[in-house]
Structure formats: structure tokens, C-alpha cells
Length: 69
Ligand SMILES: [Zn+2]
Image (cartoon, rainbow, N blue to C red):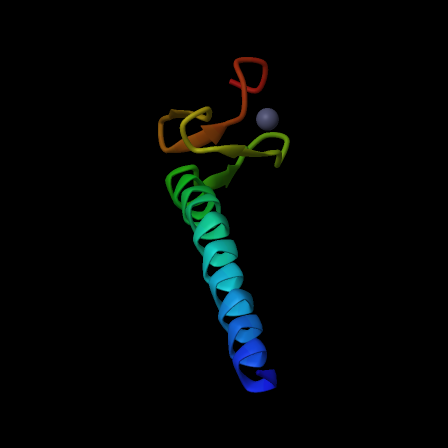
């Protein structure tokens, strides 16, 4: 009986661990994906780092906002 209980507990722990990993993995991969898609680049005027999609690129220079542009 003791061994069966031990195996059951180990199985539960393993299932819990796998579920925990599965629940965390999408968040981690999606956040790293968005990080990869949202490359941070520095403004050439004030050196503020902004996501590439939000940055203004003009004449090969990067600007964080219209103020710096
Ligand atoms: Zn700037």
C-alpha cells in the first residue's frame, strides 16, 4: 500500500509539474515573441529606448517621438 501511495503522489506531482509548465510556457513564449517583435532601439536625440514599432525613423536616424524629430 505504501508503495502505491508513493507512486500516486509522484504521479500527481509530475502531472502538476507538467500542467504548471504548460500554463507558464505560452505566457513566456508569447512575451519573448513580443519582445523579439518589439525590438528596443535608442533615440538618437535623447537616448530613450523605445519599441521599434513606436519609433520614428527618418533619414537613417531614430527618434522616440515627434518632439525629438
Ligand atoms: Zn528622443
